[in-house]
Length: 415
Image 1 (cartoon, helix red, strand yellow):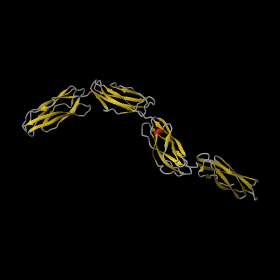
Image 2 (cartoon, helix red, strand yellow):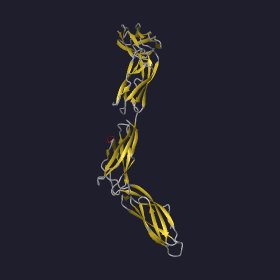
Image 3 (cartoon, one colour):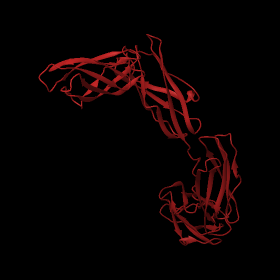
Image 4 (cartoon, rainbow, N blue to C red):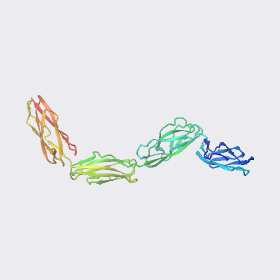
């Protein structure tokens, strides 16, 4: 018997539990001169069955293979054909074939891909994931809307779809699904659509793995704490949580920093605590606040930095008024005294806002804590009448911050 051992017999989609047939011819040849008769028998596996046939020398017989799917989707099996003869001269042979077919429902049918929607940190915006719907049935499929049922059904929604017309057999469309988890772990629901013609409902479980996101905290503002020596400044800090696990709050580093709340209880999306900074000396300080989820162990840190000592400028007098001065002349100078009443050096500069006045600054680049200096101002009018202006003192580098800028008002009269 001759045949191709590499041949694959394919069946088109057959309705579930309904048979279809594929007919092929096979030729068996005897070695002798006489007419010999033999039988070709079929041995099959899976959802396939073979019907034997009788054969005469140098002739062909036609056998059939029947496919009766017991389940939907691709079905495979093995077909083995063996020839047996009534006489010894008849050549005995066997050929093996692969057979396959697709089990399809009588009406529209459906498969889904994928069934696991996505993985995302809890609290993050869920990605829109395409779910492909395949019609593996024998008639068109039309549905108006998808529904979700099951444990976490409220978290699943459809964002959009390309399934706007009937889905022909062996065709597909895409349903875009999003999942917005309210807790971490496996989130599941069942996606269902109903064929508007037959009323048949097709369902498929979907799952989404929500991983836990660590708690987050706002960045301290200002990012560096400044305080006078042995004086406390306080900053409120807010912690937000994608879920309401309890948190522990701890601090490590310099003792100049302290917190007033060591835990956030379960049940709230956010909680607050205060960070206090009390520097004992003129130096810089650092510490770290650690927010730890007591269930997952995930943590978020907040870096703290502080500077002990702040300069503070005081001025006397708070304004200057010059006597009547002729145009083109310069008045006698008047002085403004500046004292640094803070804890650390003060660096500042000054400028005038009017050309009717002139100044002379005799202060050092950095005025030490507790020290004083002066700036003299003269009035030199360029026109008759009353002239006004200001002498502005400003922090030279704004690090550390001071009570500057401050403007000293200036007034003069020319006859």
